[in-house]
Length: 143
Image (cartoon, rainbow, N blue to C red; front, side, top):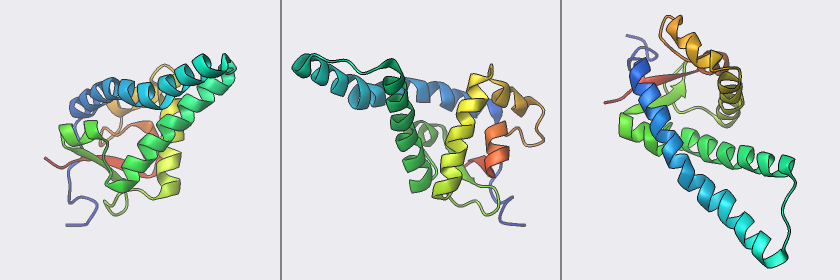
């Protein structure tokens, strides 16, 4: 048995459940890393950032969150709960920095184009999302 097939691919329902749970957890990340600083800055300095800057801040904040956890052990808290992990498709190890960053960027495109990258999983032989295919990662089941 090769290293790549050592762990089975995570099922689509499990990954979508994890994605839903992740959305709830991200409320805490955004509250601590986005809303709180903007509240403090707004109240103390009486200024508000430009809209584009706020969106860039959100994009970078979420990027730091996801890339950090994917590299650390291949799992965010939601992924730990649902027993799944993102790995390099070649060796089942957590993705490297560039690979995790690419996965993050591509996942935004998967979501922003009407979820097309997620719908891709319905036609993929291993039910992987398009951003995983393009980034050379896969999501495996570990429980």
